[in-house]
Amino acid sequence: MNIAGHHAIITGGASGLGKACAEHLTSLGAKITLIDVNAPACQALAEQINAQAIIGDVADDAAMTDAIASATSRSGPCRALINCAGIGIANRMVGRDGPMPLAQFEKVIRVNLIGTFNMMRLVGAHMSLSEPLPNGERGVIVSTASVAAFEGQIGQAAYSASKGGIAALTLPVARELAQFGIRVMTIAPGLFLTPLLQNLPEEAQKSLGASIPFPKRLGHAQEFASLVAHVIENEFLNGEVIRLDGALRLPPK
Image 1: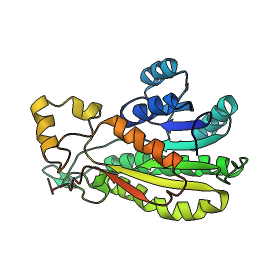
Image 2: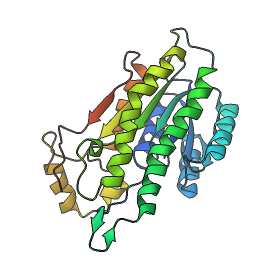
Image 3: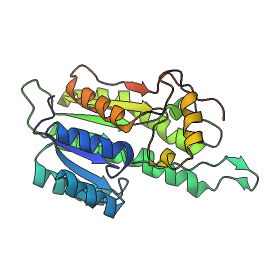
């Protein structure tokens, strides 16, 4: 699919990987809807790239149903959904203070996994009713997992479980939506220079980068965005999780 002129919804689009996707897809001629809980950042970026800003929780059924209706009313049928909304809580399952609070695990699963599934099902239903493109394709869904889905580190039980769930969703949902001409892909990034890591001291950033076989640096958000664009454009990519990590394999800690 050539994204130019088509509508893409990006969750977590106000910062980090989602922001990079919004800026890159805009440069390719896409019409963008940003969904994020950070109202000031979301609205500021929307003004900058002439996008629609919707403030809301991706795991909220009613709110996201309304969000999709508003987005498609403004920008037409959604042809690409980019799921970048996510959070991370680092905590051992059993630590010095006892077991990890169950509420922490539930929160990460709710935002990362349930939020991703919620958007997939709602946008997938919308796409299934859209007119197909000349090649029979109706849309593309790209979700964001993590290499932690496969090599979760100590303290990442909740995060790894949520991202592992996203990876596991990819093939069954791709098989289910294939009948509608909807492709489903997931990208599992490694260590990227997102706002979280940018706050670390430069020496700490270099140390993390040195752990990557090649190139020995942290990933750039633009590299993630470029892969998202390629997934949208490449009609034969479907039902797969792509690691974007410079051959990194996470150690236990």
